[in-house]
Image (cartoon, rainbow, N blue to C red):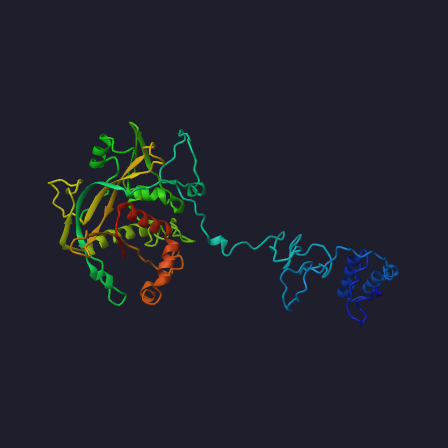
Length: 444
């Protein structure tokens, strides 16, 4: 039942007349009269309130909508002001049911007209992400300068590349040649714990990582027409796992005489190991932290250094296994000792049927061996890889726990975090081991 509006000066309380056509004007007049404190102001306020009294008791029957339904029956918790609409604390702004502007301009004040928190000087916009003003825009430059005169032949996005499948009857790859010398893996490294640690030693050893076209063995195989495609396990594993990559990289493809060669650039991304590339907030190199030890470049150098010297240290040089031929990249004039490394050149047949002759030669690599389990069994080939930790509180750590305190009790959590933050790197490790035919993978 409608009720008669009352003046603010009366002691019956404050009421809002929702049936009034222009209630905002009368309420504003009443509010102005209450602030003035003069009799003339109070009279004007009472007249403004009583001006619409004739229409206050007018009742208009409206048919109920048949589509009406109860949307939310959840009780509103007291004290929750989130999403309140129509309230503003601007000076001279009515408290209820008015769209008049406040002190901060249209839509200003603490609560915006659409609900939620608005900006102080303007419209009701959302608050945005947490500390967005401190986040650096991650724009990464390409690994090779793109010239303006280049023509784009094809653009392949990673989602489309990850859906490609080639179903072939893959036979056991054939090993055409083996080179180098391997040392036995030191099993004492399997017993290392955070309490029984062993410092990393700096050993003077040489290991070659020659690109495909500069490999003399691949050049000899290409001259004989052994296959149509030639690559190394590093390049091929990178291409197979590239949908997981984040940092820019490039590969050189040469088509010559019906043969395709995949090469890398010297000193490029293929020669280094990344750190936390797949983390939600990977390490970022800025102008302020360009020389910091936690920048992506410094972390990559550290990870590559650790990976090389761990493979040098985790072998027993007293026991060796020689392959068919010596290291193809060394010469008699080289006096530096060679690292434990064996190169296996393997042929993979990727033809869909018998008439499709599509073969690829891959130079693979292993770092150690284990003695055979039986007297007549073959030795087991070992691939040595590493994962390294840096400051867990530094930006880009990806929420990694402290290894020294968690490796013994929560080893699975440490491994799961590394798989999340370094998915691309671990995928390459697995693919390289499969291509090389390694029997065991040791991760230090």
